[in-house]
Image (cartoon, rainbow, N blue to C red; front, side, top):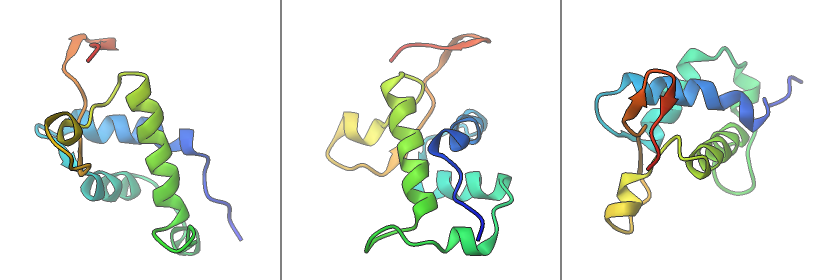
Amino acid sequence: MTEVPAFHTFMSPLLEVLRESPTPLSIEEADRRILARLTLPAEVLAIPHGERGTEVEYRIAWARTWLKKAGLVTNPSVENGPSRSRVEAPARSTPERWSPR
């Protein structure tokens, strides 16, 4: 069986899909776009994580968490209310680096 990629493998694809989107994406839509970029076998995508979700979704969530801690992504729903359903890339101050939150 093929292994699930480490969480950091999902960081670049996540940043790419957020950078390409003119508006914040739902977590589900961001995950869908990330997985469309990667060629993971169906058996890897089907590996469950506990009672909810898949191991791939769990690893993508960790990638989001680390990128948020680094200030590279924001969660506008959390900043504007209790929902945790959207993510976006902050505006860039220079072409090489994301601006701080």
